[in-house]
Length: 402
Image 1: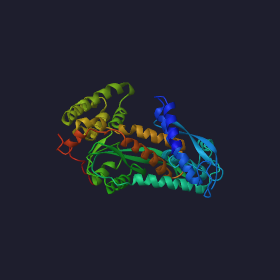
Image 2: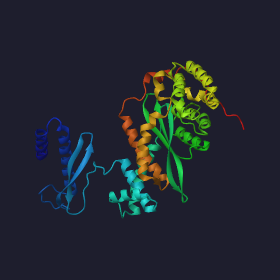
Image 3: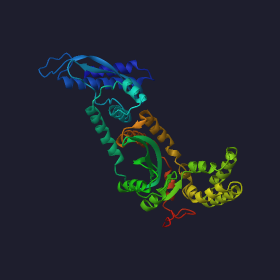
Image 4: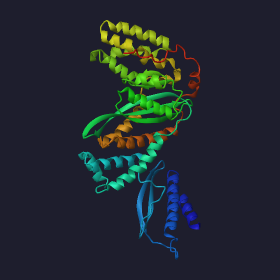
């Protein structure tokens, strides 16, 4: 105990203001490791004991990246056996998941040269299937516990966005959609609530996914924001009974596809006039006026605007302070970039389980970071949702029978 106090005092005296916390953290962690390794050995330093099982054998350097900066640690080595401090994980969850996926691809013989080079650079050549299985099992347990966790309370808004990945299936390489679901509860806090792998265009796919979210406790959804996927609207009405907001960004791209490139700026500016209006009624009026003006030159654009009106302007019926985050799937852009960054390293996934393992780990880490941030939406606006919305539009219309 005296030696530990002396070490702490020495660290405090040597550290300047900028390095104070980092030096203190290094010293405390070193003390913890020394105490821990004494328990493993069964004796203290230079202590004679009949319970001793081995002896110290120097140290190995290890850098630990933290919010305080990089900590330089000295991990005690043993003559027989090994010691690794329990507080020091070899990799973050997502990075370990990435390694596991690469290992799977390498063992299955489907890795690309890029993946093979990465495997060798990480020193993973010669790894056995049992080692891969053990690592994957540990990650799967944590990821699935996160993805299947109960969802308490009420969730006002739900975003759905798809990231397309390549996977081997039956000897072929196919493209599948990894659907990420993000929701905001009535306290204004944002969470990642689900991940689903499959063909995004099929209605049964969406229905299964939404029912699973409901089974886990998702309720109270007022608005669902997504791109236009076939079958999604019917699934939303059948399972959630919520309004659908078509991503405004994607809808604008579809609209400009009917206009020569030289006219994109002018047409986009005209359509955006509807988005600048203060309420749903004004936005609808402006949208129709712009559609009529553009219809003469571009009939297909006018028809598209007629069909998209209700879906693109649905968010205008919701609290004004929330609208900047409700009109598109852009709030998920940063999350999707991180998912793609990790997935691009793999290239072609060996199976769907490996997609869930890697993407699920990325989502779990992102969700943990979100919990440390401020509310995503103002709680005052949530109170307005309990009241009848101005110019409230009916929920999705029931599809006509074929």
